[in-house]
Amino acid sequence: MNGRGTAVVTGASSGIGAATARALAAAGFSVVLGARRAERIEAIAEEIGGAARAYPLDVTDQSSVDSFCAHVGADCRVLVNNAGGALGLDPIATADETKWQRMHDTNVMGVLRMTRALLRGLIESGDGHVITIGSVAAFEAYAGGAGYNAAKHAARAVMDVLRIELVGRPVRVSEIDPGLVETEFSLVRFDGDQARADAVYDGITPLTADDVAEVVAFVATRPSHVDIDQVVMRPRDQARVWLVHRDKP
Ligand code: NDP
Ligand code: 8X3
Image (cartoon, rainbow, N blue to C red):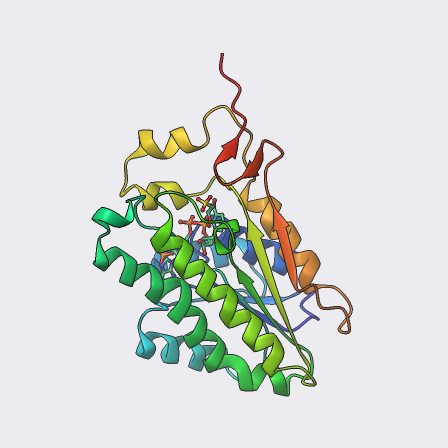
């Protein structure tokens, strides 16, 4: 069953993006997966089967975005801007500009590049939907978070403006803002340091990628007149980014 049209998922090679591609396919979408690790998205598309397709995508590179979107064609109905992440947890005093620029390029400019490239088709579909995976970091500052905070705050502003600019057009704009989700996120943030990444989830039951994907699929399958503007979701043990209850043996 692929009666709901085409859904593009960026950053579909792991974590929330991979789970979202599976969930949207199960909900009846023909999914198109994009990420830099081509072999991973090809394997996930093959596992999903049916009309799932996978093409390499680097959202920081306009020519890669153009080639990817040429494969998608004109019939995209849902775009899930998921590609992104954090690099480091450095205080502002010792901030690494390269990391800040990479975070901005992926989490903000990537959202712009993908949305701009597919927007015309989304409008012409008569029932388009842009869903962006933000973060609680989009509205909650925390020590060491400045570069990622700034990027996710900016991505949120972009989505707010898009919602305003599209009012009266047949396109919904939704933002899903999760707290702690156990994926490769922390491994990437801490540059492959597995022990440091594991410590982030120590003593709590974090959200899973499937928990978030289930919400994305719910948001994407509401009737056309229902726009779920924003969803904030966290593990029960997390009240703020920095306020986490941990069970210690
Ligand atoms: P993962 O690290 O598991 O997944 C990140 C995905 O983004 C990968 O598929 C990666 O693929 C892709 N990606 C990174 N850079 C690029 C790029 N330049 N072009 C295309 N794809 C890219 O982390 P999550 O699944 O957790 O992260 C998904 C989103 O959720 C991110 O936007 C993150 O900020 C957000 N988020 C995560 C939370 C968490 O606690 N895990 C909480 C709140 C929000 P590849 O490397 O193959 O290109
Ligand atoms: C990921 C959640 O708390 O690491 O977006 O910023 S957090």
